[in-house]
Image 1 (cartoon, helix red, strand yellow):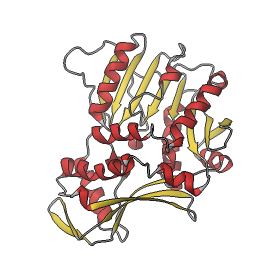
Image 2: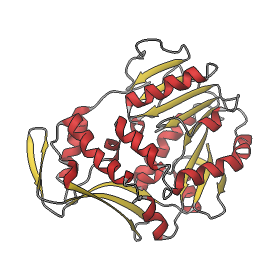
Image 3: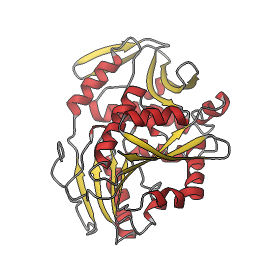
Image 4: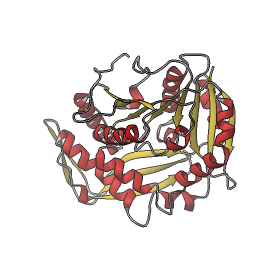
Length: 333
């Protein structure tokens, strides 16, 4: 696999059915990315910096809040239609999950005995290794190749992952975090992962446009978990790159941008705040926002066109009764 570091084994008692792989760790590139973002006219930070161990745990907590409809709505779609989905993918053997988080969403699919191999990818390394160690112990007949690193840059898998019968699984509307140009590039990467044989598929969740009040409530939960998740990005950058952010000096802000069809998340400076980026120092003025995330909402027809431009052939699409969320099955043509 191009760019993949040597296989790594957990210390202690590692389940025999678990292998750990590491993508290269690019701290220098991350520093350049932070510098590029913070010195832009509209300062921004890449959403990859959300996901240290604490950020991953906070996101899992967000998905259980009353306001955050995508997770439970998507889960209901899978509960109702999973048999129909898998009926299309007759030769399935390998489940590949970029951005797997806790691996919980894959559990329903992994109950299918035809899927004997699981390849989760997650940027939060310790979090992924812990989750996969538990899963491997619970599922001794399942072979797991855990890939630690940023899935955005991964377009090939270790040789230990079978080439036949691949199903790439990308739930949760994460594709909406990428602007359409970068979403197409990511879908092209997924096509490369799936199309190693003639029976590769992608099963992917997308959020649908809906009332502003529903959208904005989902990203401004009453428990304040999304606000903590947003500010934790700054703590992560302090730990990783010694940026000297003061997270408490930033206020979470999330709103729906109707013109661009997306939720935007920002962190707004409450006072003039100095920041260190490597050997450089800058000050963000009071009132300045740092743009941390987007979440685009796609009509099913628009998403099918985007996926087709990346080489996929639409197979089927399932939605909930409210038409709040969609799950697409696509074949790697």
